Image (cartoon, rainbow, N blue to C red; front, side, top):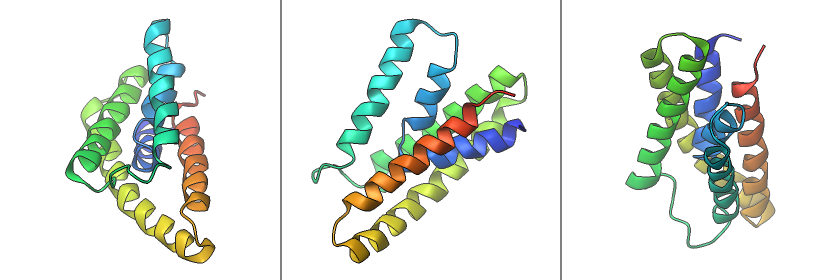
Length: 140
């Protein structure tokens, strides 16, 4: 799969769950075990924390900034692993993260209105994030 497409998929995943694609990248890398465990724990914590009522909006300056940065880092990391240019992949990862950050809020609001609860949309978004992250880091 083309590196820029993988960077976009990683960015889309990051817009849904900020740590999903970076954790998937770490888990499929040869980095140290503590680094992989830390990435997995961070992503798992976000899956739980996202459902809590006191969790701030992903569109807050800190939430959106983190998504843009993590989308860029993951895109660049994938490009580095593939031996291709990092800057274009970082820009695409960041842009894709921005797009799904905004789209995710709208989609969850629509699902919350339809189902009377935010949880169905939150769990659906978890699945989308994990699937996109898995596709982004898949080799071959």
